[in-house]
Image 1 (cartoon, rainbow, N blue to C red):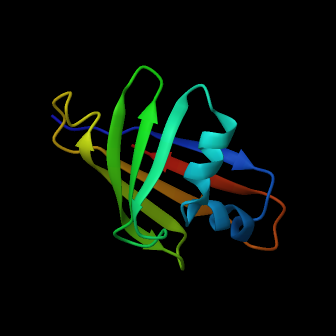
Image 2: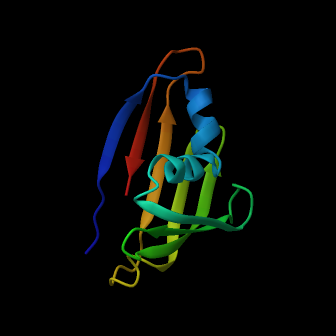
Length: 117
């Protein structure tokens, strides 16, 4: 069995500015800073935000997993990551992929972020 869920969020910033966060490791670091009681650990194990980058995320309660950046498309502003160890894979899933798309124009004052798991 497989499935996916998507959600779109409007952000009051231009697409270029939002992609500066989502297209790198900056978003993960910002999430850790903003949610210190939820994300208790975040380590960049390999890479600097390009395809092949591996990060380890540890959530409160000891739930941890490693994910690998499998797609970073700067032209279309799409990033995909896949769990490669722990977390949902330990719970029996054979694939756990996250996809983030930043939709909009640079000169606009807002854009959409489409997140798909």
